Structure formats: C-alpha cells, structure tokens
Length: 244
Image 1: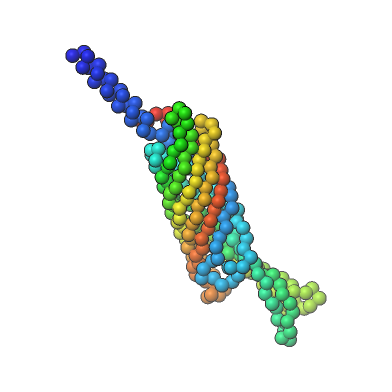
Image 2: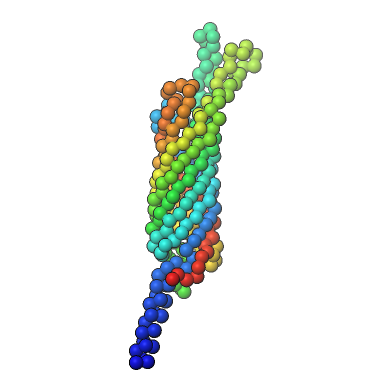
C-alpha cells in the first residue's frame, strides 16, 4: 500500500514538473525600438503625393504576454515623424508671363501616432540548457492611427524686388486626421543575457485616414497609404520562474 502511494505521489510530482516545463519561464517582455518607416504614394490625393517624399523616423514602446512557447499577444504604441512631399511648380505673373519654378511642399502630417494590438506565433530557439535564447516570430496587428497637423498655408515671396502680389503658397498643411491601421509583422528577439536582449522587425501596414479640410473639396476626406517600418530595439523579459 505504501509503495502504491509513493508511486502515485511520484506520478503527480512528475506531471506537475512537466506542466511547468511547457510554459515560458519569462512570460512578459517589454521594450523600446526605433527605425525608419517609409510610405507609398497616398491614394485619393493628387498634390505631389508621388513626388519627392520625406523618410519618416519611427520610435515606439512595445510589450508582450507569452501564453506558451508558441503564442503571444501584445500592445505597440509608436510615433513617426512627418509625412511630406515636395515638387516644383511654375508661377505665372499678373501679365501672363512665366516667372519661373519654385519648390512647393505638401505636408500630410507633422506627427503620426499609432496604437495596435498584435498576436504572434513563435518559433523558439533553445540553448544547451533547453532555455529559450531567442524567438523568431510572425503575426498580425490591428489598431488606430492619428495624425497631428495644423492645417495652415505657408506663403513665400517669389522675388523680394517684386510687389506683394507675387506671393505664393510654398507649403500646404493638411488638417489632423484619424483612422485605422492593420498589417503583419516578422521579426526576431534575441536574448544575450537572462533578461536583456535585442529585437529586429519588419512590419508592413495599411492605413486609412480621414481628415476634414474646408479649403478644397479635392483635398477633403479620406486617403490611404502603406507604411513599411523597419526597426531595431531592446527587449527586457521578466515574470514568474515557474507556471502552475
């Protein structure tokens, strides 16, 4: 009878230890990252959206909760620098003569904020002690996007020797907007220490943004674009050393 009880207790202990082994040792990770986030041409807009574009910089914070060694969910909040495009236009004088060409900039957004929820499938890589040293991952994301802009026109003087009527709009700023964003991500997190590691990620996104601008019907309403962020960052993982 005692032998049976010992065997039964041993089986329970082994099962508990095995169950603990299935869960990640450090289920929570947080991090910061930075990189570039180029955009494609803005659809539904004709004002220089396919001309000389800016190269936005992106900075963000991110966090994940890992349910198992194969699946995690997370939240990503980031900010990008301005979306703008520049082209040359020809100015005509009051007498119908051609004055020359000048640069005109179209500022779609001065700052861009996004908040997305994400879900990733993990492909873990183990070290010699069977601990997770790194994860390759791929997944999907969906959330909101918000643009910050002042909606004003910037005027410039074509020639200081000419009268004021030779002023022209050198910058056209859109108004602020909001919309949705979704896409997928592909990346890797690699831990060089027990808790501290690094990450790299590519995260193509589709965005749909609505603005309200009373200055012109052709510049009013929604526009779409694709964003292609490529970033690198630092990750820190922590949590319970065992799962029950």
